Image (cartoon, rainbow, N blue to C red; front, side, top):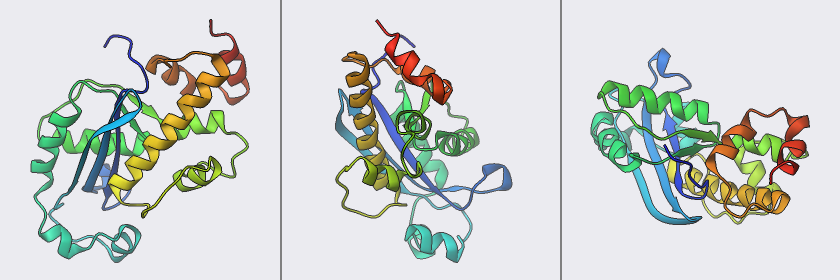
Length: 206
């Protein structure tokens, strides 16, 4: 893909039956927002039936019940529509390795793919906000005084909060570097930079 700005992409979040698709876990909800020049221009949200009951822990954690999922369309149907939604866009998630595993697994089941690249807001936050108490999404929202009204652990709300955090981080990077349109490639490079070398990387930018 050609070089692209980090303020125009899709921020996504999955709720799932467990931690690993390799252990048979499935997606139960997808939420995503499309950012264009930092503004939310489109949303995607859907529950999906994983074909098996979810545990009481997951019901309590997410607020998603087996009854809700029994009435939802199957994963394959939802993910086919989501593949269309994300086509051609770069992607962001908080703890992206988790969401990427489920995205890859669910799309693999229906032989769909995507051509965007992933970035992780958690890894960026660890480098920019090293003094934060921890780097959970809710903690960072509070740490940066970002307004939030809703319930974490639902996919659309979490993706909207991640998008707000993402734009806050881009603004902070711009302030540190005087780069107005932060390239997505810089974000990817930053995630691989040791914490102690972050300031040196940012200050070296033209």
